Image (cartoon, rainbow, N blue to C red; front, side):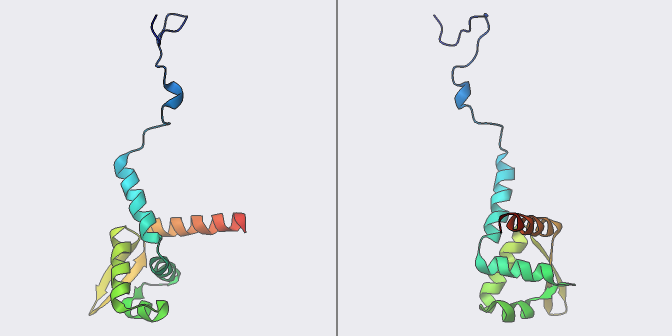
Length: 119
């Protein structure tokens, strides 16, 4: 007698109850984790919020003064946010200005809405 035989004559795998739900695209998962990891640090998250609250981009020099960390730490944090697609940057003379992406706006709005639901 076969283990996977069903009485109506069809066959079925015996481990169906243990099959993981849905396929997870590994590239999409890697991208999601990159974004979440980039936001998962106090300094990077604070920079992201400050950049998002600015009207027309924020200069690196202004960010250094507001978050209280070294220029090197700010530069590394901004680089990570840029690589994750959370900020854009533009150069104006010798200064770089950072602005939030649409992804950032959506994520921060979602976080704000979630916070409102459990406060």
